[in-house]
Image 1: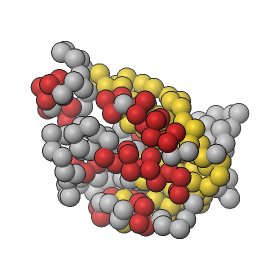
Image 2: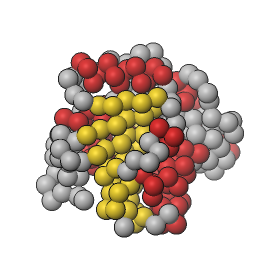
Image 3: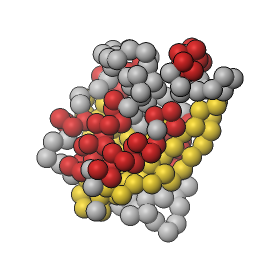
Image 4: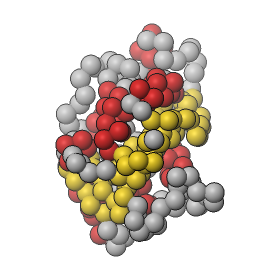
Length: 228
């Protein structure tokens, strides 16, 4: 349902964030740009997976969409609810696993900025700020779950917009989505400087083949997939 006109990206300003809650960064802004290309209205049902401060959920709600946001972090849930109240926008914010909390519901648009940083640990963190970025040895633990869940989350013609690092393999994401019956493509790409987490793992990332010697920029992509 891409619109022929592009709505200028507008992320809410003056967002509150409790300690440890992921603040909007380059990946959030890139996803917001792509959201601006989608047609939203009062009948549009939107789900945001991993809402953080609620920035994207609020952006969709400001355009009239009916928005549900989910996060596994209690601090993120409190933060998003406070920001929704502060901006006087109606967003339903739920705590827990996105699949469990939305079982039986379908949406026109699903937004996802999942954890996608490759981590030496095979287990996802159960607490702390690293929950927002650590995603297993290949960075795909949450990405793959979203790909698998997309067919039951989306209405016919519905759209998934997901941002993640090039390190995770966009082609693998497109393959998983195709296997799930969705037509996907990369609609946006940007290169940004490595942040402190990647810099702290430079040697490990190079050893695992995720980066080259001296590499200092990370590629980010937005994948748009539509349910047929």
